[in-house]
Length: 199
Ligand code: ADP
Ligand code: TYD
Image (cartoon, rainbow, N blue to C red):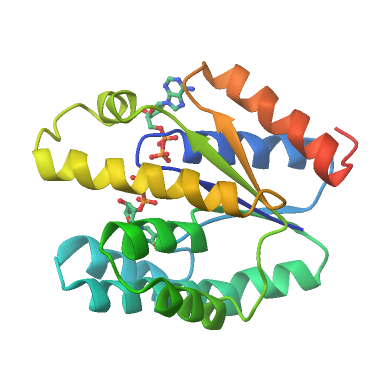
């Protein structure tokens, strides 16, 4: 089973992904937690490159997809084959939202590259942690006052909600503005309902 967490920076994805990993492990489920981009030696190097160079949108897109391909091939697919529950902190919807809608790369191109990188294996369930932009900026330190940065993230946030409305069977929108435990209980309720996990 493949479960992904999505949302703008500071929405609380990593916090919830970690909580879910610990909870499932404590119940005896064999579980893995990975971050995208990252979690293989190659993908971690690409992550460093992405974070240290500002490139044109297409180069950025290809770097994200290369890192994802490595993560998929070396970690996610083997783990799924072993019957593990795999949790990912970001995945394909990040690229649709940030590079597709955010950087205005053709959505068909993004979709094809996503498909290639993940070998067609889409998540079974995706949690979109949704919070107001102002709260996200506050949580990540409030230092990012550049108008464009805020405007970019606003575009990304709207894009995530649009994608969620188009893929209701896969993507569940969670209210991330509440405290950590309240957000987590929405996640657990949804896993019970949608995937029939005995939690
Ligand atoms: P993301 O992975 O989406 O960037 P994080 O999980 O790293 O977000 O959270 C960003 C910051 O907000 C961290 O300092 C974290 O402790 C805090 N945080 C996470 N969830 C909540 C919450 N529900 N309420 C308040 N603060 C939170
Ligand atoms: P990450 O450190 O996971 O984000 P966060 O700040 O939420 O913990 O990801 C680094 C940045 O990469 C983040 O700003 C979102 C961006 N990103 C994309 O633009 N496209 C993608 O496909 C992915 C996976 C991330």
